[in-house]
Amino acid sequence: MTSPANTNQQTAAELLRRSLARGRLGHAYLFLGDDLGVLEEAATRLAQTLNCLQPLERGENGVPLEPCGQCGNCGRITRHNHPDVVWVRPEMKSRVIGADQTREVIRTLGLRAAEAPHKVAIFAGADRMNNNAANAFLKTLEEPPAGSVIILLCTDQDRLLETIISRCLRLSFASGVVRMDAEVAAWVGQFAELARPKSPPLFGRYQLLGSLINVLAATKERIEETLTAQSPLQKYREAEASQQERWEEELKAAIEAEYRRRRGEFAAGLQGWLRDVWLGTLGATSELAFLPGLRDATVSVAARLKVNEARENLESWEKTQRLLNTNAQEALVLEVGLLRLKL
Ligand SMILES: [Zn+2]
Image 1 (tube, protein in one colour):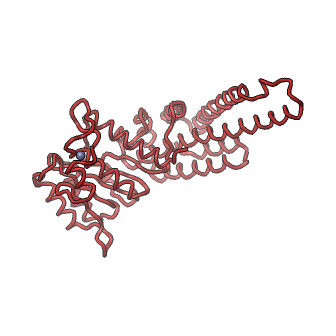
Image 2 (cartoon, rainbow, N blue to C red):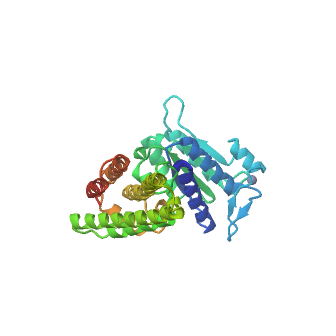
Image 3 (spheres, rainbow, N blue to C red):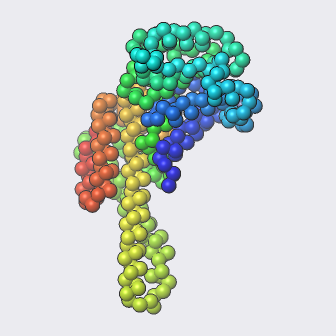
């Protein structure tokens, strides 16, 4: 199995790529994640993509999509010594990004790019900006000088001012979310639509529970059919009774294991949507910040929740997932877990 971190990074990278392909280059990006190194890589890559001299691929509108990694610009960007790609890091002593540093960046962004098509400022550890720095920055974030792109890297979103967050296009490189296949995504979409209108609390919650129980029942049935058809039990009906018994046990165990794995994927899909709702309560509105196609439902649900409530949902559903992996009774765990969600 690929690690969730990888798949999620790929998803974020793919979202970025799609937005570039559609000709939508944002002027301020916020890359969120739990590993600064991963975010720095992603920022380096975006800076290269924008400034590569011989991109391997371009979108329909001529926007570069894939850097070569080898030209003069790509090389110097990797080595952090390109004059048009500025890195801003917390000062060694204070461990914060101060107002002076920020003003210096603003000044640099205002200058014409020395060589590259785009001037890029990368704040590695934007969560270390102190309030003065952040406030000095707001106007530039809203209207950066033409041809400049700002990338904020952040591993602790709680420390960022809302006013900063809301001015950026957000992409999450966090490892908490698993990529969904089409079936899980379809169910998560259905769940989000069911949750969208504000309904009387209990009724709404039982509808959501019903949706989850239905999809799991159908999943189990399908797994049973598929694995039973593959079992030697079907082929060798004349085998000895003891052999048949063993096959039966193996089949039962295989069905259970596969069902648990699949159930985990549905639960993780819901976790992904709850995370989006939380992002929504933090002010995310861009389509890019959310699971594809779910923006409207996600924003509606987020609009009636407080940040804390959305975060409690995340914690509580994580707990539900842990309980599902124990021998606790599934129906009960799911019922309690869904009733706890504030939606
Ligand atoms: Zn290049």
